[in-house]
Image (cartoon, rainbow, N blue to C red; front, side, top):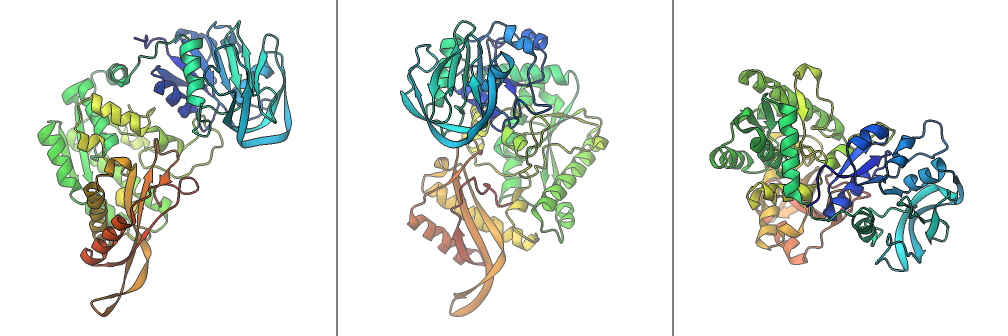
Amino acid sequence: MQDIRRPIVVLDFGAQYSKLIARRVREAKVYSIIVPYSISAADLKAMNPVGLIFSGGPASVHQPGAPHPDPGVFELGVPILGICYGVQLFAYMLGGHVARADQREYGIAHLEHQDGTGFLDGVDARTQVWMSHGDRVERLPEGFMPIGHTENSPYAAIADTKRRFYGVQFHPEVVHTPQGVRIFSNFVHTICGCPGDWDMGSFVDIAIEEIRTKVGDKKVLCGLSGGVDSSVAAALIHRAIGDRLTCVFVNNGLLRKGEAELVQTVFRDNFHINLVYADAEDQFLSALVGKTDPEEKRKTIGAVFIDVFEAEAKKLGHLDFLAQGTLYPDVIESMSATGGPSAVIKSHHNVGGLPEKMNMALLEPLRELFKDEVRALGRELGLPEDIVGRHPFPGPGLGVRCIGEITRDRLDTLRDADAIFIDEIHKAGIYDEIWQALVCLLPVKSVGVQGDERTYEEVCSLRAVTSSDAMTADWYRFEPELLQRVANRICNEVKHINRVMYDITSKPPGTIEWE
């Protein structure tokens, strides 16, 4: 079993894909953690890493203020893999040369190699890779040799076998590099010597220890929605600290059909977790009157959510921590990992922005995980499949699926349509093939004919996508007959809808949710 005190450490230089790197290492059944690039060599040595990975990043090594690691990391005596910007750091800091490429390289390229170091073992001699760089290595540092090239990058893969330093100009962590998983496997197993036997059971032990260390003898308030993320977070924290956890379930009026009843039954009656039910539907809907802008709606929902938690916390007496089921895709869509200029795609009500007046520290034990890892963790904790297998549901709930004006009547209409869609997916036996299925109620009306009478009613859009981690997603190819059944049922059973559409937008360019 891998000693969890000897991780593969990823140094984050601000890349969008830093967590994907850690994910690929975990998929190879090796424990990995991510740290800021600015960590000192002494602190890094104290972590006792078995290997290091330099992530990519948006900067040029030559620009003022470009992120550079402590030079002492090269003296730690452990293998290092540099990716994109990371390989350019090798050249820049170890005596080679990096220059602006005559032709920038973005997108698909083809790597050709004849590697005998073990780093590219099992990788086709010519294989597709994904490039995203403007600079390139022009001269290798002493001790390095080229082991692969593309048409535009003579040093697309390099190696210093004596120091066990390896670098690639492309991104092996993305799906567009089909054999990237093999490259990571070679690095962590062959080069670093990791046995590859770490699993989510090991994560449970680590997380429980971290929660107990952070919380001590204090008390935790957890926001429980009944979705996968908050459910797993609650189960994990409960295992760590027991009855010092109190869960608050807020009915914000933006829930799915039957959600309030289900959550109370499962967690209070079945799992015997301290559960407080806060019926704040009127409070949320009043605050949302007249608001149609997506960001304004999200921020309003987040602000009311925090107000409700404050009120419940006061009733319970002093609690020290607020726990949330924040996942990594939430984090990277809300802020730059290193505080840099990354674009904010959309705000998440459960990421950042918690007002100081709450006087509670934040506890996010799932913050470093992707959705499928959270599902695996939930199974490890013994949660039932109908909880851990549920499709993701956004923190702002139907507030981001009721496009335009939010009213009680429109929410009820949306709830009914959504329940029909999910019911038909279950009946077809394809629920687990789909990452997320949802209905959006659109801010337009349509003329229709029902019972020989003219109607002028709401329009809804069905959406279903496949994904592995919500970073990218593709629309699900339903059989036409199923879509027809769903549309017929919605138009016949939901009073205020007379037209149904199916959304075939992938991510990118769209997001999974409409708002």
